[in-house]
Length: 366
View (cartoon, one colour):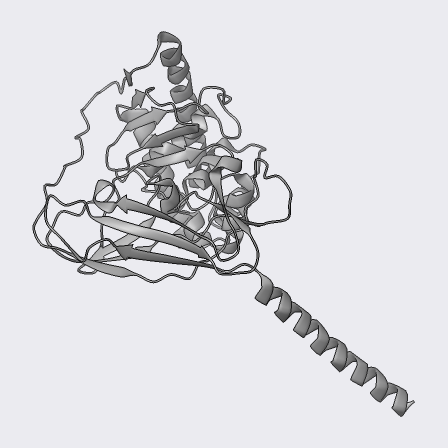
């Protein structure tokens, strides 16, 4: 009996180490991505382009498909760099977009040992105006990585994020650069929307979408405000989109919806239909309250998931004068994963606010 016991014990130990060795081997074989950023020059004058080079390397023995979203490989469509001066973060003034589903064209394939690069002028998208020393770091990893398996890439909804190894850089701006003040919001007691480059049909559609956005934002703000504090920790709708309850998170989300509701109800929204990109919409967060409507917006439903009304809420939340949200995750599944894994980012994510407001399918608060 004792001999049998020790034999089972030895076999269990051997099995444990063999399994551990197997997983170590598998993890070691997984693709590894290393990102490098470097300034084209170390010093810049006022009229210079402040160019930075981004290189993404696949240092593994497998080919990998990398989503270009939120990386320099697609240009400026999000706040992709963390630029600091004197302990303060430099304001991002480039576009923030609501995207359609990712397709094959949104990925780049890196062969084993391969790399891809892009050069951007960060002065085009960041408020770099004062002379001095600046530091630059990447603000995002990779939103989605697919290992090469011989299958054709299709439209993808569920992402597999990946952190990348990277380091920061510094540069000096030798002279002050001209700053561009954001447009002042004109007072409009009736908050009648302004339309640019829109047809009559588009204007009619946008009036309906704005009305629906007002209703959704009112319902969203009210649902948070009237939920008793003793019920808040179990509020399923909040937990689904914003993660585990804390009083600070709950208050932050409520404050956001107060401001979103105020914007769509009381500010002069400007709708610009001059956009042919295959996305829903975009804004410049420092330029309230102008929203550019794009190709994916027009066939979207008026309400429901990824709707016209929801798009207006999403984009309105990006304005610094409103909630200043970011785009950490896109799509319902990825936003729910963000809420579970990183509530601190979920409460600052534009799609999370949109899906809370759209509430499709409905999720009760208690």
